[in-house]
Length: 422
Picture 1 (cartoon, rainbow, N blue to C red):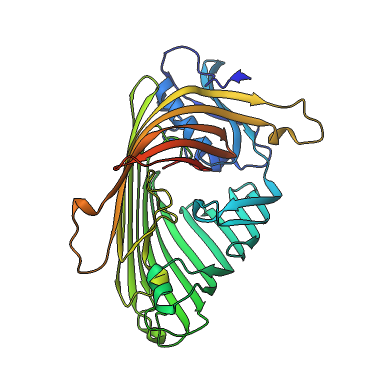
Picture 2: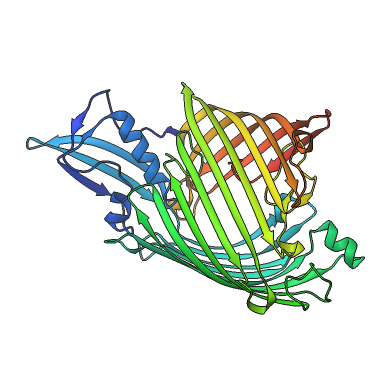
């Protein structure tokens, strides 16, 4: 295990005359250069170098990134030395749907990252168990480098177990719905931190019977045309586990627009801020809200206890037209930026045997509630939990969390999760 140093020795500034990239056997230079907040002729210092190193890591296609300034023939060069991660993943998997141990699914995932060296991703998933499905995704964040265009395509099929308590009560039983979906997203990046996009999609939802409001249309099959607008602002240093910066996402979707008797809207806001308070102590907070209006089917209601969860109420399911959630968390790096190399293992590629390891202690408070249209929003409605935990980082591949949480009446729970809290 070695310290994953920045390679930037000393506390000095230097004017960069040229930038050299080494180790990118597949990746095009512009994929890396596009993320830098400086250019040739600018002054570089250790703080700026560290921030830009994390931005390169955030591309999620490198095991290691180091920045090293050096001089040659009266010119100052910056060497960006990278190690590319393994890009092809034909692996079996076991996962927890909605982070629930009672909803186990398993299957095969084939993922091709950094396709053609342009940070494109092709992904196919075949899944059995809870909510069996087939999904295909293609993303291209650099569709046109000169004008900063990006695009993505996704389509698939899933059998979805109903999660709405109201729909179950109306049907008098548990039931599943079949979902066929397709979506295209096309957008433009403005500068370093702003993304604006438009999405166009079609959902086909088949319910085994017709009950008003379980379906969005006047039959058991909903054919929903979707038009959406998305704005994203992101200044985070390391997207996978940030210590500094702001993330904001606004999404507004028109669903149906009266076609096939389907007509409702969904708006979503997610705002996060990360700040280094002092030393290795990081403070971060998040607020997210989802609002629906119109003739909303129960399967598109707003839920807490599925993708959104309150620690301390991890398995409690809340349902409404809207939800509001918030979190405050303090992170302390017990171990930071260590390089774990397992090159002694035979037969596996070196790029699968190198990890950026971190160990982070946590203190957190979560709160949230749902609300149906017409209901007042009061503080007494909010479920709140607080606790402590440990996050273990094995970047760029995965993050694990083990946490202990209490709720407002003193009930406790242990939580194991396979992602960052936010």
